[in-house]
Image (cartoon, rainbow, N blue to C red; front, side, top):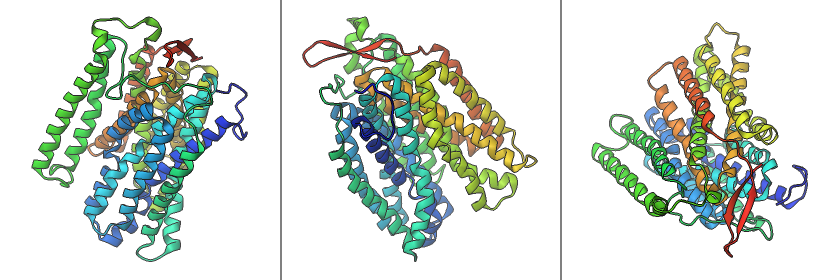
Length: 488
């Protein structure tokens, strides 16, 4: 792992891996959101109702929550190179299915399966952490996350133009189909272009892929508590799809899913106990301990940061349109400024973390995030439009820089569990989006922004329980010796 000066455009192997990684993540976001800018054309082509359009939007995120947990475990067990390549390859199939769909049911199935590609983000977090030292890790992870996350904005810009270029009622099919081809081809480029670790470095694996390891009895019970919101969000999505929501599934299927979620949660508790049962009898050597409390705090912060970003990006055009009586196209262009901030703000959040410390950076950015949403809650039609746009962009800086700061800390907790930790923290971002959008369906825009501001304030209070990563984390080599990995 190189500790030389961070030079983004050098030809060093670690920089090549970083660029391979963010491009892979970029493609996953293009594929994940390739339907959003084309919904009008898709609805017209297949005569979809407004409720069916809303259902597609829900299905697009439904599978991502469990997928991020599963992909995090697969990454730790099999390595980022294989996991990312297989994900890109397999998800090109439902992407092609979506492009070839002739009915709402086919669209819905393909969109549901495509939620899996939204889990690609967590793979690169582990890969990048293997190639950069702690004092450059926040910057590298920020570039990976920020530039990759821009894939959703790129899809919004490029795909409508491609659909028009292909022309006709099937223009959207060619545009979506092209993203499937790109995903398929890049899966091979990525596989042959990267390695999991630098030459001579060891890729540390968890002792089990069934559940996350913890190192104390208290952390075991905290792990179980932190699993509850993940299942709660899935139950909420089930309710949205039920007859009480958009009626995509009937009452019997809704009940079966609820029972399945309860059974799954029981299985998760059992698996966690099986993996960690030794800690109830034999204390873990202090050198091998890590604090799961760190993970819990980062989960809540990502709930407020990425969760709010996903929610706000989907409602901001309508907010500007209704608040300032704007044409929806013009309002969409103004709202896009929120997502465009990702290119710089997320890497900047990681860089600030490297330079000034993880905890201090998170406290400053979370404070700004809370105040930013409180400001947006006060926006009315009497505000100058330019001031409202500036407020939204300022708020988005703290949101996205906060995301970068969160994942500047994630890889410094326990190396062999980085994929699983990133998977859980990433899943909490999707949980946040589900919760915030559900709140929005019941309250005004102003109250919606106040709810986000309050949840960010809760995250700020939890930060007082987080410890700044210091010293080193210990991992066991294949020969039984202990390697210390610096975290500062």
